[in-house]
View 1 (cartoon, each protein chain N blue to C red):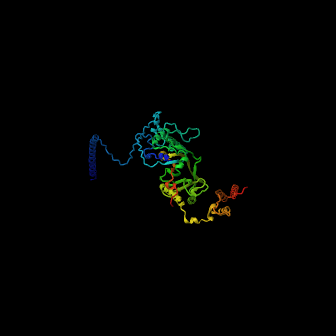
View 2 (view 1 turned 90 degrees about the vertical axis):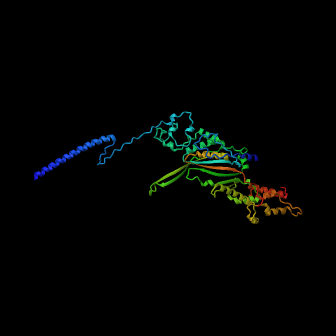
View 3 (view 1 turned 120 degrees about the horizontal axis):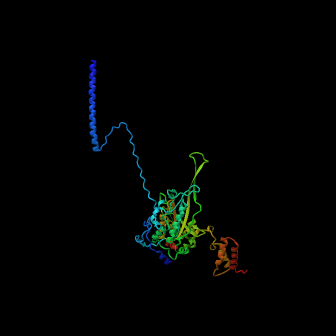
Length: 328
Length: 166
C-alpha cells in the first residue's frame, strides 16, 4: 500500500514538472515574440522594481554665457561721450574708458582697479554732467531765460523802484514727503523810510509793529508762517503791514488825554519853558507878541532829551544870550 | 522809472515743464517750439537766489557746486559768493554697548552733514525757474537742496500815500 502511494506521488510530480517545463517553454517563446514587438513599437519592458532604487539625477550642465570684451576697447577716441553716458547711472567699468582705481589696500599695494569695485559704484558720479554736456543742455534751455532789465543794475536803483523784498524758500530733498514745514514761511522786508508818515502816525506805527522794526538799520520785517500755505502767509504779512499802516493814522479820543508824565520825549511846545520864555520876551509889551526862536526851542529840547553834556550846555548858553540880547 | 517798468513787461515764456529730462541731452531746437505766451503780467524779479546744499559726502557737494556754477555761467547768471564751512556738522548718539548693564562701555554713532552755499544774483522769474529746475533735476542722490529766493516787489498802491480818510 505504501509503495503504491509513493509511486503515485512520484508519477504525479514528474507530470507536474513536465507541465512546468512546457509552460516555461511557452513563456519563452511568447517573450521572444514580445521582444520582437518592442523593437517595432519602441517601448521598454517595464521591470517590476520591488526595491526602490534611487534614480541617479542627471547633472545639469551649467552654461556659461560668453562675456564680450569691455565696451571701452571698441570706443573711438573722438566719440560723443554724452551719447554714451546720457543720464545719471551708477558706475559701470566696461563703459568708462578711464583707468580708475579706488579703495583701500595694504601699504605699498596699488588701489583696486575699476572692475568689480564697489567703492566706485557707491558714490554718485557726475559722468553725465561733463562740461560739453552742460554746455549742450544750457544752450537748449537758454531760450527760456530772459535778461535782467536795463536800468536796474545796482541795488540802489532797484531799491528805488522795488522797495519791498519777499523771501520764500523752496526745498528739494529725498524724503517720503515732498512737503517741508518751512516752505510756507514768507518774510517781507522794507525800509521804514519808504512809507510816508506824519509825526503822530510814525510814533503809533512803531508802537504797533514793536520789535518787527530794527532801530539800527531802519528795516521793517514781517515774518508769517502761521497759515498752511505760502500764498496765505504772503497775504497775511501784507495784511499785517497794511493794517498797521492805516491804524497808525487813526487818532483815538483817549490819545488826547496823554499827560506830561506819559511823554517819552520832552517837547518844548508843551512845556513850561515855552511859557517862561514868552513871558520874558513879552515883558511889559503891548500889541504883537514875540515868540521864542526855533533854535532856542531846539537847544532846550536837546538839553533835556540828550542830557547835559558840554556841547548842549554851551549851545543853550549861546541861545539864551542871543534871546536876551546880552553881549558877552 | 516808467521806462524801466515798461522794459519789465517781458514776454514770459512757458515754464519748460517736461521738455528737459536729464536723459535728453540735446533737444533739437527746431522741434521744441516755444510758444511765447504774453500773459500780460510782468515777469518777476529776484535780486538773490541763495542755495544751501547738505549731504554726507563733501566730494559730491563740490562736484555739484561746480556743475551749478558752470550752468549759471552758460546761462549768463551773475554768480555771488560760494562757500562752505570748514567743518561738518556732527550729530552724535551715545548708547550702551551691551543690552542691559555695563554702563562704562558705550558705543557712539554719528551722522556727519556737510554744508555748501551758493549765491546767484539778479535773475528774472523765468530765468530763475529754468535754472532752478535744471539744477534740481540733476541733484545727486543723498543731497538736499534749499533755495531761498528774494523777490523784488513794488510798494502796494494803498501804501504809497497816507490814507485820506481814516
